[in-house]
Image 1 (tube, rainbow, N blue to C red):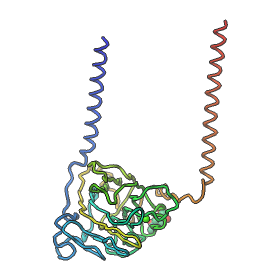
Image 2 (image 1 turned 180 degrees about the horizontal axis):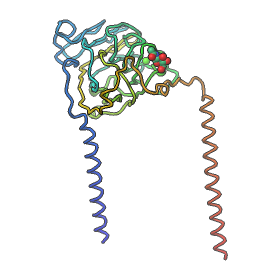
Image 3 (image 1 turned 180 degrees about the vertical axis):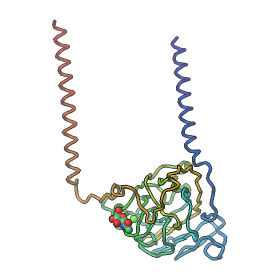
Image 4 (image 1 turned 60 degrees about the vertical axis):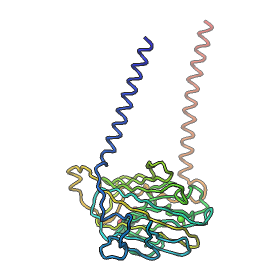
Length: 332
Ligand SMILES: *[C@@H]1O[C@H](CO)[C@@H](O)[C@H](O)[C@H]1NC(C)=O
Ligand SMILES: [Ca+2]
C-alpha cells in the first residue's frame, strides 16, 4: 500500500518536472528561429575591415585588425579606439552576441578603463565615455574595469552596466555611471581563463543583458528592463579608452541575430519613438547615497521595525493566552 502510494507520487513528480521542462523549452523556442545578419556582424576573418569600401565597418583611433581580433586599444596609456558599423539598424527585435577579451599586465586595480558597446544615433565620435562622445543618443553598455568612485565599495569590478542616453543625460565617469544606469552586474571578465561573452537582447521593448564569463557555456542574467524604446536607424559600435592605466581591449566577434517574434496588431501599429526613452525612467535615477541613510530611508526603517514589533507582540499575546488556557484546562 505504502509502496503504491510513493510510486504514484514519484510518477506525479516526474510528470510535473517534464511539464515544467517542456514549458521552459517552449519559452526558449520563441527565439530559436533567429537569423544571423551578416551585414551587421563582425567576425573572423575580418577581410578588408576598415579599409575596403565593401566592408561594413569603420575603424577609428588606435583600433586595428589582427588575424584573431579587432584590438580597440593596446595595453598602453592614453589610447582610444573604436569600430563602427556603417549600416543603420532597421530591425525591431534582435540579439547581439559579443565575444570580447580584456587582458593586460596591470595587477590589482592598476588597469583600465574598459570597453563599451553602442547602438547610437551618432557614430565615429571621440569623447570621454570609453572613447565615445558623452550625451550620446541611444544604448550604451559598459564593461567597466576600473572603479573610479573608489570610496563606494558597493560593487566588485569589472562591472557591466547599461544606460539609455537621450542626448542630454550625462554619463558620470567619476561615479562609474551609477546615476544613469538601468541595471548591471559584476563579472570577472578581465584576464579571464575562459572566453568571455555578452548578450544583448532587445525584443518587444524589453532589454536583457546576459553574460557568460566563467566557461560554463550558459548565460547569466545581468540586467533586464522593460518599457525600453530605442528608435530605428541607429549604429552598432564598440569603443574603448585607456588613461593612466591600460589594458588590451579586444573584440573577437559581434554577431547580430534577427529574432522572429509575433507582433500583435497593436504592436504593429505602434508609433516609432524619435528619442530613446524608458517608461518610468524616474525609478532608475537613483542618486548615490552621500553620507549615511537618508531621511526617507530612516523613516521606513523605523516604520517597519515598529510594525514588526507589533506583529511579534500580538502573536506573543495570543500564544500566552493559549498557554494560560491550556494550563487552566489541565488544572480542572
Ligand atoms: C532625457 O532624460 C532626462 C531624465 O529622464 C530628462 O530630464 C530630459 O528632459 C530628457 N531629455 C530629452 C531630450 O528627452
Ligand atoms: Ca570606471
